[in-house]
Length: 436
Image (cartoon, rainbow, N blue to C red):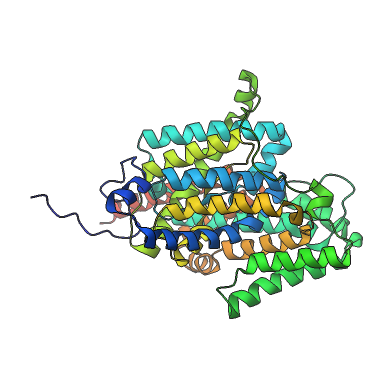
């Protein structure tokens, strides 16, 4: 008689964490019925409603087209759920990638981003196959908190232009300090209508979240803004005026242009994509474990993220990862299995095919308002204050990671934060050994 399997504990890989068997297969082995499908359908629709405006907003903030975000959510999101090692993970474009993607597009063009995404996907597959799923355990907590807070600041800074309807004489700088200086100089071009839209969207989201949490606040706020823009012919930039709208479906798959020189040029960016996608997805899986009592299979998750990024690049989408907010929404909506994440992508494709003309009227100020709320929610203010008031070493790690990520480069910020954390750890060990 086989020994009983130990109970699952949240937040840590199970004895099969080194396995690369997708959770979808385990779900069907355990038995899957109509009741579970109904729960998954409701959860998938709920997440799709949240992901629709968010995917477009993240893509625009990254310097890509809204369609690129939708392609990523549809193709990448489907594969992350189908092949992943977390039962509830939702994949798609993430706010943490905004800075990195914008930098890659600025230096190598969108074709360069597609190639870097494809290569980063390959690196993630190798990481999963070589059992590197436990990497999240070695990133210090203070580094993760500082990095996330810095990304929140960068995201908000990237939205000031559209929040205020500013007009810049040239290209908006990518770095935070030059960006803020350029936006300050453009202050006289402030568009009061855009300000009213962005404030209205933020207010609507917060009020619905407070008094009617079951109502999809993101979609309602953006839809109301789009209706007002269309009905009143408001003088603001929209998806249609800046991007010409969104397509009615997925494009034909095609390999991005590549050469040896181009591959070498984007290799550091591919490594950054793989590292960030791996950390973000495994962190999201740990959060899902804590909410459900389940345990993820880390190596399977990395393989799934890799395959999803390869496929997304072939379909012209931006890079994807596991998304904490959408994964939490999926769980709260009653998801029973990875089928919910797959259905979320199917619903997104249906929305794209049916509502593409309506998306043209969405004001960019409305999407900026959505991302402003996302940035506010990303920064874990309680954890930041706890670390600032706690041990001096952790405070220094937090500040170093935050400062370098926000002002210099996200990979430099993570690397420097980890290096300082490990240095302080070893110095502490030496002091303890010298004074037993």
